[in-house]
Length: 318
Image (cartoon, rainbow, N blue to C red; front, side, top):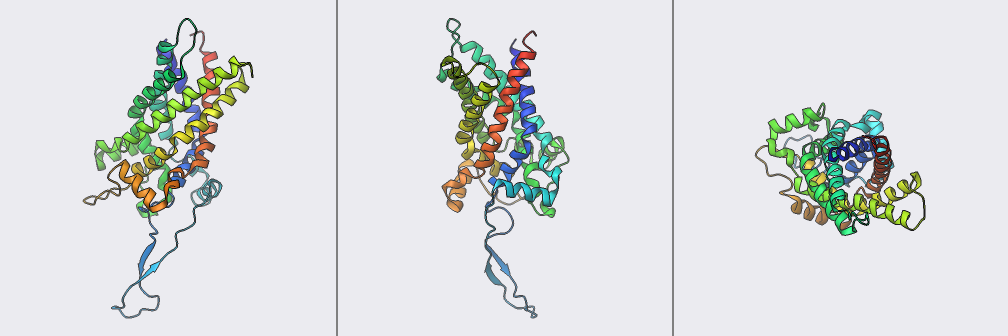
């Protein structure tokens, strides 16, 4: 019976992850906008255009950073510069991530939910739902972190100059090369952030979905059907996006950073990345990519729970 929750959650998560992957890719690209560890620094040292003498002194020129753009513009640029297929860069990593991370968190949450639900009333307190989400999300994140690192890198690769791209062929190629070139520990880079984010997302997403769905049904606002599932899941997606976005921005930047041999890493850890980001770009930088986050989290959560409810109906006799 316990295994059934893992199967149901895994199928729903993979379908939801693949169908919303382009939105996730746009979110990652937007979260990396303005980062100081990428080409096009604010100040570049240039030689004068007409300096024929070899000894001519270079001149420091302030180069204006390109303005930050919205999700539609980012999406259009990806298609124009890299092709339509680029919108699915890293989709193999998404499948592996959902298989490892989401299957684990959904299955564990289902087990804890059944264990902590009052058999007499059939109710589970909101605090218990949040606790179950925190535990399930944390464990799921540890299991799925290698796929998460690979996915972030594959999604971000197209924004780098050709000479600097990693050009991973697949998620397995990414994980293999990271292990060989940067050590096995690189697969768990940013894992503390992944765990924190997963705990926040799972607790806010699953707990709020169950709570909102129960409230709608108890108050007789709607019947238990597609309308209730869509309403509860969209609300849950919004709550999850607000709670997780700051951690998600830092996670993306730490996972994507390029550590040159013998050189100090751009960020020493999550806190260092957060401080540098806020100092350089302001506090609202932690909500970069929020529009694509909610644009992705909303549809993802809707597809996730609507699919989950349908899969449960199909597998109810098993």
